[in-house]
Length: 73
Ligand SMILES: [Zn+2]
Image (cartoon, rainbow, N blue to C red; front, side, top):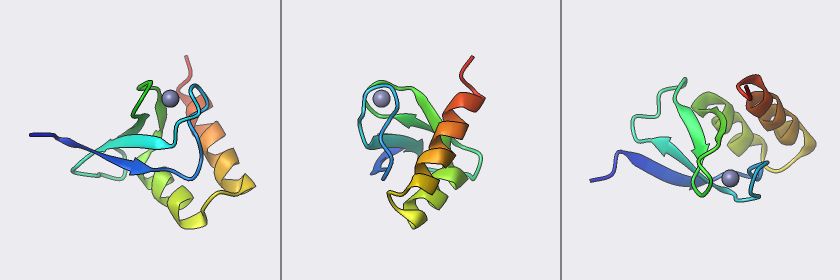
């Protein structure tokens, strides 16, 4: 039984370039989205939803870059 779910993000993971992301099945707005292949934190679920709605554009890339850097410590 899996408690997480994979989905495709329009913006690639900055570490490995994969578009496959993983989120918990509960999908709370504040749930963390991680890269499915390298497990790096990407963004929060509500941010991922914004990116999914916008599609692959510079705005989406900027949003993901900001989210990734926010917790990059
Ligand atoms: Zn990755």
